[in-house]
Structures are given as structure tokens and as C-alpha cells.
Image (cartoon, rainbow, N blue to C red; front, top):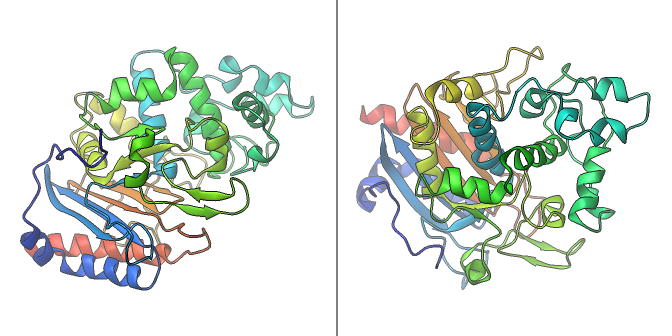
Length: 378
């Protein structure tokens, strides 16, 4: 199946209507492409249950002959995996009584304590599933586990023995390592691989037909490349996960590995805006998407993030009820229940190297332009 061969489940608005309403948002993206913030982008905006913007801009690379990005081009989602797949699986298992949020991680993965130095074991015994979801487990943000892991099992063992860098529950520090371990817990509790369970229980019921881990080989040329990797894989990364730790795990991990088009994420966002049907209950969505009360000052929910008071990637108009997430490759998804609005922005800002950071300025500008366009119309 070609990853761009199906029409989205949400009706597509007329091109001329989109261009007129969201001219400023599209202009910001086109200028960012001209400035080499990223070579291409796909944007999907939903409002009050309808798809109101659905555009592809730019090309796969900066080469004038590279394929143009289509509205439904499949991208490497990077850390959007954490919310679209991993957190949603956690929600499902929580609803079904198969996952206790306050259960210690060591209940499911005893090696997390047993393999640690004795002086760290008491603290590690206090790390819970809730802490992993809320990014306050004390585990490090990121480590190059792939540098010394020769197999998936090696990498998981390395994650299990990663040192604690802060006392559990005391500080919110975004952690890939925590979500690697969370993914392993969820697969164990589901009795099925994270990729298979997510497809069966999330993507198929929502008709997210082009969302998957490990895209097939025939999709490769239809997916924008993310990086010319001269350090680790020594090749252009296209149609395979950019994140090295996820690659070392075979492309399926709790923190990265998912691929999807913007339209599939718009469907997912609408599910969340409706309160979860047909896959989740409204109470579960509310529990997981409201900001956690601790640690003090955290912006995190269970899995998601919320707008920061200043310099949020969601811009200045998304309400405090909003929740969203970013991905390292240049992806983002923000959802605002108060406005009944979602914005999916997918780019490959890591092409040809991950040094370019201009997307940090582009994201809030785009979100502001979209919200202001909606307000001008209403």
C-alpha cells in the first residue's frame, strides 16, 4: 500500500478557502522553508469536528528536484510516539485494570532495582508508572545507549541500569529513558508488542490507516528523509526511525519509532477532543491530559505537556486546558478543548543535520496565526 494512496477520513476543505483563511500561517511556513528552517511541512488543523486546513508545503529536501510534500505525506513522528502510541496504550491498560499508575516500576521490571548499586536501590523502589508518565522519575533525559548496545535486549538492560540524576518525584525532567522503560512495561502488561497492540486497539479503530511503527520498504521513497547521518549509521536516514536508541531496539520503542501523516494525527486529535470514543472513556482522557499537581512548577500531564506561561511552542493563544507534544525531527501536535481546536505540524527540520533550531521560533508563530485566523472568522 502506498502511504499516500488513501483519502483522509475527515472531509477536506477547498484549497482556495484554506489559502484565504490561513494565508498568514502558510506564509510563515513558506518563509521558514525559504530560510532553510526545514525543507518541507505538512499542516492539518481541525476545528469543531471539521478539518479546516490540510496542506503540504515545500519538498522532501532542499533539492529543486526532490518530491513535493503532499498534505498526507508520512513523516517520522519522533517523540510524538510518546503520546499517540505509548501514553494512549497506558490509558487503555489503565481503563482495563491492567495498569496501576502508582505501582512501582520494579513491580513489572524488578531488574530496575536488582541490577542497580545498593545505595540507589531504595530510591529506585519508589519510582512509579505515574512518575514515568509525568517525567519526574529522576531518570536522565537522554543517553547514547546505542553506542554500546549490540541488541534490543542490551539496550533495555542499559536503560534499566541508567543512573538516577534526581530524587524521584522531586523535579520534572523530560526523559526518553523513562519512556523506553514504560514501553516495555506496557508490552508486558498487554501481552503483545507495543506496535501490534497500538495498531489493534488505537490505529485500526480510528481508521488511522497509515500510522505505524516500522514502515514497509515500499513506503521508503514516499517518506521525507530526516538526516544525512555520518556518525552512527553512515547513510541517509529515510523511511526508518531517526532516533538511534529506537533504531537499536528494532524500530519499536516507547519513546520514538512511530510514522504517520498529519491527517491521521488530525483524526487522533479529534478523538481526544471528543473525550476518547470509540477507544477511550472521557474520564480517562481528562485524567491523563490535565496538568499534574506535582512536582511543583511542572507543566506535565500524564504523558502530555501543557502550555508554558512564556515562550510555549503552542504560541500565546492556546488555553490552559490545552495539551500537546513535540518531536525531535520537527513534529508537533497541540490540542485545545476550550477552542475545540487541534494543530498538527509535521516537518523534517533535522535534514540534512540536526543542528538547525529555527523551528523553535516558527512553531509559536504558526499556532498564533492559526488561532487568530479562527477568531477573525468567528
